[in-house]
Every structure is written in structure tokens, then in C-alpha cells.
Length: 371
Length: 102
Image (cartoon, rainbow over all chains, first blue to last red; front, side, top):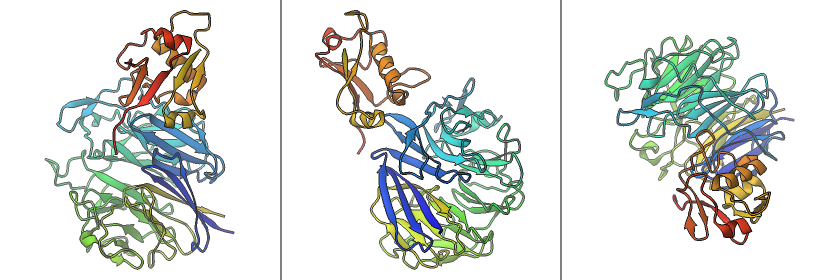
């Protein structure tokens, strides 16, 4: 019996949505951690009942929560994120040096193989790893202390490490993305890093093709083809076929190439989804019409998916971590909005319906396919 | 016995309802500092570490305040002695989440 579990992080708590393989009727539990911001909840691929959640508020700081039963009950884990060694400075918004300061965990990425190992991407940008199920955290400081680190600058949402991709084929290879420093790759399990930004072009930078400073919003990978990555950048949808060595634009006929999330179909590595957003100053869909765009050609040629989505008076946003797919034969696509809706499609995006409509603003959506 | 009143989110996190009683001072009516009271609170409820003070620097978090006997102790140093009514347990040490946001 297959089932789907959707882990939803919101501004005011976490919610768990479950359904059978038909994905027609949903059970909703929550809010878990009511009143707290839940930036991310994610399950271990090696043990799907082991979940990790990032819980924070500006008042009381960061907590990490862990569940052993798929989100029914939770236990507090370790919450000490201390940068390794002398922290130094990065650039502040006004260009002056600013000390690295921990603010929150944006993204949790459990190991593909070990339920007790989990990575955390944090603000101010750094990568941490726990090998004891989140009880203690150690910084993989080779990223933050990269030669370019003192030149990194925050985006409007803070200087966050928001994307961590673990390569299932090349042992030790992983990718990280930081707003607005760019994209980075490690080939030694996170010990050392180098920028992988060749081909990116960002007009808001003094040198649009500089190695550092690109505001990468999200990167997606299909596990069967980890050298191919898809990127939603501040502007531009990009693709690499060589693990980030070079990127090329695939925005093609999108109505706008600004947006936040990007996802890949579970069974078709060249089918990609984005949610175009009007512009960097207008964070809502063009013309008030919420449209997911799908490319079945690995980019450039895009089709709007609108059935079941509001096509008038819709002014929500879809944030970078708020879209995911299941891995059933008929791939399901899910995304959450800042208006509190979580939309699901059980037919690869052809038709959509709202699983819930009135949650707090959705920060993240992760999907588990359970057998 | 020192009574500590936590804000709602920290009560939930610590799994307590109402005021928390700390068995301080252990050896009679000796002075107890603000820092010692917070240390004892965190020792009893480790989940509260980092919620009121930065774990690295010990600095009070920006939106957390400490009140007692109608006085704001938030800007006092960790070795500030708690007022006598707090030591007697007749007045609580208040941990307050600042009013901000929407």
C-alpha cells in the first residue's frame, strides 16, 4: 500500500498532510510547534519515519526537532550552531564588513544513507553537519572560509544557505546554494568547496558575470542524472549538464523568468517545473494568474498548467523550498503559497486541487512517498 | 526557592505549566545573581539553552526581557544580585517575550 506524506513548514507551525496513492482524500495534522516559524521539515530517505524540523522565532532563537514516527510525536534535538574558529566578516547591505552571525536554519538535508546524519544550511550562510541525529552540530567550515567569503552579501531575505543537494552517484559530491553568493560544489563530502557559476549572468552586479554574487534561488537535481542541474535564479532559469562547470539559460518562452522554486519530475529527468513570478519587485504571479510552467524538453519550451489553479485575483508567492514531487508512477507535484494554500496534482501537473487553503504562509513543502 | 515565570512559547518548549520553582539558594539566604538563576533554569530544562541568551556569548536575546519587583533587569550584568523578594519566593523572576511583530 503506497501513501504520500507532505511535510509543510509555515510561518506559524508545521502541518503533516497524508493520503493514499490515489491522492484524493487527505488527512491533515497540525499545527505542530504552533506559533513558531518552521522553515523546513524533511524526512530521512533511509528511514522515512525519522523527520527533522527547523523551528525558530526571532524571540527565542533556533530549535531543532526530531520525530521517530513520521511526525506524530517530536523531541527537541541540539540547537547549538557555533561557527568554527574565527568567524571573520562578510559584506553587509551597505558594503561594509559585517561579522558572521547565526540567525536560523533554513534547510535540513538528511543523508541519503544514514538516518543519523543530517546537514543544515543556515543564515548567516554556512553548512553544518550532525552525525548523531541532530544532537550536536559541527560546521563544515570549508565553505564559509572560502577565499571569496568576505565578499558575500545577503539578499533581501538574509544571507542564507538554502539549498543542499547530495549526489547519489559520485561519492562525496554535494552542491550548496547561497543567496546571494551563488552556487558551490564540493567533491570531498563538504570539506572544501569551489564556486560553480560559470555561465550565470546577473545584471544587478557591477560585473554581471562575476564568480560570486549571483542570487541563486533554488537548484534541483534528478537522482538518476546528477550531472544535470536546473536552477531558478533571481532572474533566469538555468541548466548545467556537467555538474555546474558551465550553465546555460533555458528560460525560453516563459512569461517571466523570475521565480523561486524549481523541481524535476520523479520519473522523467527532462521534465521540469517552475512557478513564474512577475518580478523582483512584484512577488506575485503575472496578471494575478497562478500558473505552474512545465517543460518536457529540459527547458526552453514551457507550457502553462492552470487547471484547478486560480486564474484571477491571485497575488500569492511560492517560496524557494515550497515545491516538491512524489515518486509514484504518476508523478505528483505539490506546492504551497504565501497565502496558505497547498496545491497538489496527482497527474504531473495537468490538474490541480487545494489540499488545504487557509494555513499560515507556507515556507516549505517536502514530499515523502511511503510504501 | 525562586519562582520563574516563562512566556508561553518557552513553557510549551520546556513542557511546564505555570511558574517554575528553582531550588535556589541551596544553602540559605545567600545572594543569587541573575546569571545564576538563568543557569539553574537552563540546567533543569536544557531545551531552554539558547532561547533567552546566546549560547556562545551569553548575551541576552534582543527580544527577551527579565523583570522582577517592577524593575527591568534586562540590562543588568549576569552578576547582578536578584532582589530579596525574589530570593524569598514572594515575587517571581519574569522572563518576557518583548511585544513586537504582528
